[in-house]
Image (cartoon, rainbow, N blue to C red; front, side, top):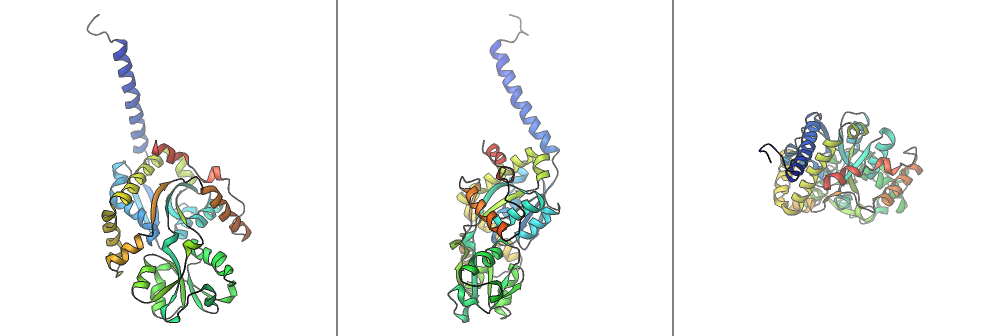
Length: 329
C-alpha cells in the first residue's frame, strides 16, 4: 500500500469529520449573514430575564448581535412588532394572541411564568381586602396589557363589577405607585417590582394576586419574517436562552446583581430583600410545556368573545415549537 493511499477506516473518519466541519461552517455562515436582532422587552420584572440575557454575554457567545428596545409594558412591544419595528419580544398570552391575529406573530418559546408577580392593589389606608370593594373607586390600569385585560375581563366581572362600576385611569404600570402615594388613584393593577415597592413603603396592600386567576406564562415572540429568513439564528438564540435558564437556577445571586443594578440605576429605591422577594415570583424555565395549547385556546376564546381578535389561531402556525426542539437537540 503506497504512502498516499487512504484506508477505508481513515476515509470514513475523514468523511465524518468533513460532514461535521461542513455543518459547523454552514451554521457559522448562516449566522454571519444574520442581521442584528432587534430585541424588545418591558422594563418591569417580566422583562428582566430578557434584560439579563442581553447583559449575560450569552448572545455574543453564540455569535449573535442585538439592538435593544425597552418599553414600559409588553403590549407596547407587541405593537412595535406588528409594525415590524422589532423582531423579538416578550409578553403574556393575551398580548401574544392579539399580536398573532393583528400581525402574524409567532411564539418560539415560553420563557417564564409571572402570575405571582402581578396584583390588584389598593391604598393602604382604605383597608380594602376584596375586589368588590373597589366599586366607585379610581383604578389605575395599563389599558391593553395582559394584566389590564385580566382585571377588566375576568377579575372584576367575577366580583360583580362591570366597566361602569369603577373609574379606570389609564396609565403605565411604572407610574402607579407614585399616583397612589399622591392619592390620584385609589387602587391599581400592576406588576413587580412595583407591587413589592408599594407594599414595602406602606403605600398599598394586595387585594388579590393575579396568580389566583392565571399563572401567566410569558412567551418569546417573533415576527414571521424573522423566523423564516433566520432559522439558524433563532436556534442559536434559543440555545442562549437555555444557558440563561441555567443561570437563573444555578447562579441566582449573579442574576440578581445584574437586575438589581438596572432598577437602582433608574432611581427606584428598594432594599435587596424587597428585590429578592419580587424576583422570587418569576419562574424562568425556557421551553414549550405540553399543557400549553388548552390554556392558549381558553385565552383565545375569551378574546374572540370580546371581539378583540378575528379568529382562533391555528396553533401549529402560532406556536413554533420546532426551533426549541433543535436548540435542545
